[in-house]
Length: 362
Image (cartoon, rainbow, N blue to C red; front, side, top):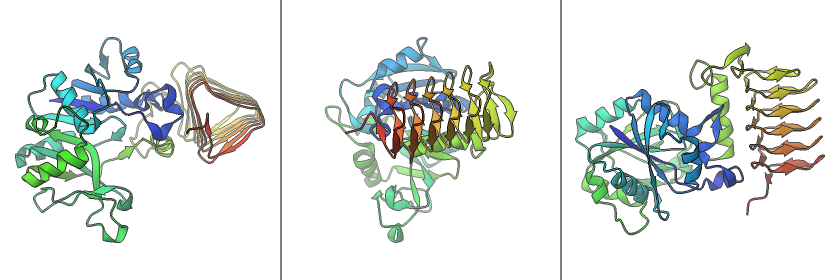
């Protein structure tokens, strides 16, 4: 089976990180999001993927020059203009000449979904489209998807009040589609799969859904990006090392295989990547210090993510925040409240930032 993976969005909620890097190229404990998505597909025998691209396609082409990633062969479909979700699926599938049952995956969703079970359910129901569902605590922030006893979708209800929601199951962003679905999508304009295509399939009685309790996270916000990293470190997702070839250096503490230089204290769950430096008197706790990142003398990094090459100056504090690739946090600066520093940006020494974006996002 082939798959279309949607990676064309601009990642506006993750700005300023996505000013320089598409969100699917942001790392989750050293491996890019897209590598983790494709590795999951490959584990279920999917070895041919079409990347539906729009924003900064050059980043993907540069990262995978041999058109392969995580054991999967890649075909690139670059939209000439934004086509929305259904339009992107149609464009990519037509570009790759997909003519059989295929999978669609949102490239910013990390999940342990049993894809084989979803495909089997789809075929058993002779469905035209099958949607994976996941439960959430508060469905009022999502569109919920009630089904009948056979799994046939009855409706799509957008952001219902919590006490009025007919279910807590939401669209999990993985679909099994028949090629006939492509004929239902207009080719000359933007089309939303959630607002137009799926409701039309519900009306036709050919749309089904299957719920799963498997791990699932939409990494499209800074909070969720932090959580996705933390889930790997804490063992909430998976029970092995957070990245292949990492070596254990303590209780839920891992170092890159080639090794960092650690003169300070590292408390788990944490990961410190290759050629990273944690200086004397500094403290790292429940954090990812990516390859080549530096934590200066007396600095504190807690519950945070430092992307490759980031620098935290002496005496600075980074607490519950994200520092982008190559960015610099000046000496004795303080970042809290899910502050986000974009790639190659600079926080001036002594700055005190809470829930800030550097540079500011308009």
